[in-house]
Length: 192
Length: 133
Image (cartoon, rainbow over all chains, first blue to last red):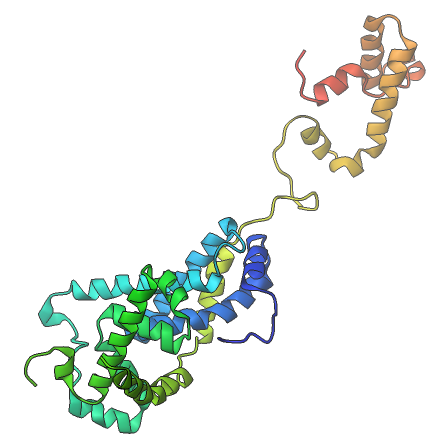
């Protein structure tokens, strides 16, 4: 997890200080937590501008939650992960609501194009492959393998049981391997 | 799915996950600035303390005192008020003469002003506190 060398105070302590009008505490929290929010939003949405909007909205909700925050009741980061995931999911649902002929096709990962990407940039290849997964599998894989959360915490963030998390992660990884290897048939698409 | 297939998946993906973690998007200064602006706007305000400058409409004693620049500006007046109140109760058996002597003192008239070195007595203090009648 990102280590904030500048401030050893806990997220809870900083949030409580912010709630009392402490500006430096707000700055420390913003520097510490915005990267988390942006990363997860970016992984879920595949779009930098939308990811920034989600990150900003998530942090705004944190600022508003500060006065009523109960220290020790939940981890600030767990709470923030949940808000980011929910906001990103909302955006993804809105995309799906767009008429089909206007919608981008995130599942349309042409194996040949991906093979080229793999040579050039593994990180970009992974992001493309993530966008080819069903959203819940994408969420679970991002939280587990890119954010490093343990399954119980992922369960809290996603609002499901631990076994469901394990299943989503396993299926997600299988899907990633299939896409990265160019075997779109393994994802259940007909033809190609 | 077999255990060995899962292990193969993990091995295949390990490099990709590592590359993705290394290439994680970092927030721009502009994004941080927007988020801090939101923090400022949403920040709970501390309760007003005595050091807060500026006149504020208030009732009773404080409004009266405010006209004199607060407690500091009326230190002497407050002391004299209390003293006058004490002297008034101590020195007069006839309340009606208190009113006369206070009025005389305030208007600067005649003998009463010289002999009755009172500043606002009971009635004036009562008015100051916002009490009616």
